[in-house]
Image 1: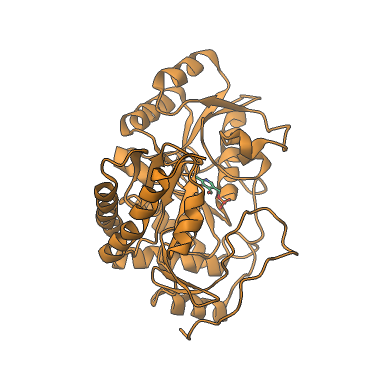
Image 2: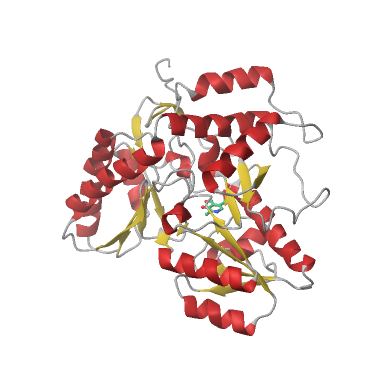
Length: 404
Ligand SMILES: Cc1ncc(COP(=O)(O)O)c(C=O)c1O
């Protein structure tokens, strides 16, 4: 990679104002490091929000994608795309599921899941199917997925919301059993195994197992949104595998393409034949470039044992953070698993985003008061310790300041 360009970062008056952005324009990256247009270097603790599984400029991924770009980028789903079968077969092998539909993003994968659930209901004679969703959930920004999301801030201004969702609290089996007794229209339960945008809130393993049993007993679909927590991030291919269960429907996206846009909904036998020709589609979904990115990402992850690595280096990172912040007033809890880590503080801490960037570290803050780390899975133990070395003093200083 050549030396960084030295260009000033500039506002973007022609781009719609949907993000509060930091005044940093990134130029290029290598491994877990990013450089901005002014030549400043950052350690990437964010991974493009759990997307850059293999970091930046990965020496095995880049030539494969270059070769694919030159060969064929897109051809439409009018034709067979052998790479779709290759990626679907691999996803089925690592998940124990049976088939996949490909799209371009997390919300699209979730839309497909919601359509599967509704059609599953209609196929068994339920005219107004309802789907159980969760408080603090995040499933995307389309009208249906924001309706399934459990955050009024995401929904405000976009009413009327899509109907057919019943909301329950996380990890409360009595609440869902009560709904099961009351509501004959339920067809599916839809949740993140670890809520990402909601603040790194973990679904308990015993709760997941109880849900699996309930879904079997009631003939409901168990639909697990692994868009953020899947693809090796927690130290298993998929976060639900820690509970030893298999879902019926599993939306994926983010880390599956290492940065090339991709989404997938992977299903088991109970959901595999719900959608037929004409029921669902996409122009871009399953294009050869995205499929190659998925195939190569999973291949490289396997070749380099990155799933086990995520668990091991996640321990290093968490250990260093816990040690550095032990006994610090205002640190409430360490949450998450592997390389999906949340540090919950006792006050809103959005300012840490800017302070971390100024100190050369990319992080995120979610649910107002949770510092979230989602670094590339290639993070080394040394880089994990560097993240803690930068972040711990920033959090300590922040918590020692008088509250605004
Ligand atoms: C769990 C989960 N589901 C769905 C989405 C939506 O994905 P996308 O932004 O690719 O539409 C996100 C994005 O953050 C997510 O975290």
